[in-house]
Amino acid sequence: MKHKLLIIEDDPFISLNIQYALEAKGFHVIGIAETVTAAEELFYLEKPDLCLIDIQLGDSVSGVEFAKVLDQQQLPYFYLTSQTDPLTLLEVSKTKPLGYIVKPFTDTGLWSSISVVWQQYLSKNGNKLTIKTDGYVHIIPENDILFLEAFDNYCYIQTAEKKLLVPHTLKKTREQLKGNHFFMVHRSYWVNTQKIKSISNHTVVIHEFEVALSRARKEALISFMNEI
Image (cartoon, rainbow, N blue to C red; front, side, top):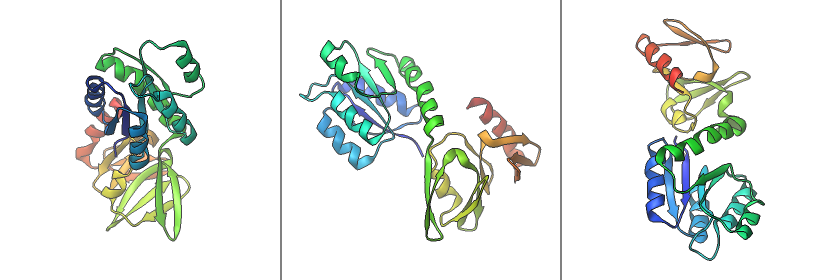
């Protein structure tokens, strides 16, 4: 599942450039808002994972006011900024952005401003998978998942501490994961590549488990791990 991005920017040329550049990097842009009012409507409707906020919008309400809403919700965001007056800078200092993207910028500059900080944020806070099974709701940090295992029309989620049977197929369960570090090593397994200890011709060792590895997938797995 791709991370959902909301863009708050009143210049259509800039907002579309951001959309095209970040969709090429795997984000899903759920909307572009030109005002804080429109941003709030999209936020509560679509529940984005990350926002990019222009500090100085043409609207009477600045992007800083929306940033304060995100701080209350503990949702991450970057500011889009050019020259800013001292009064606005004072308000900005009261908020908690992940960082600043200075306009004008290139596609490469945009991504370099976001990628490292965003990955650090994900590593620290992590994505979480919410699963309902056996009458209970389990909230599992994605980083705790060792692998997913197919079981007929169901799926097992294996962590170091427990194994949960969930009422979804392997494919559907994988689609709920947002991390880019999961890889299909066999038609019955998706593994967390960050947990791999060793790779042989037929198996992958993860924690204390041996998981089947298709011969045809071995080279692709090694290549994938070198790229992430």
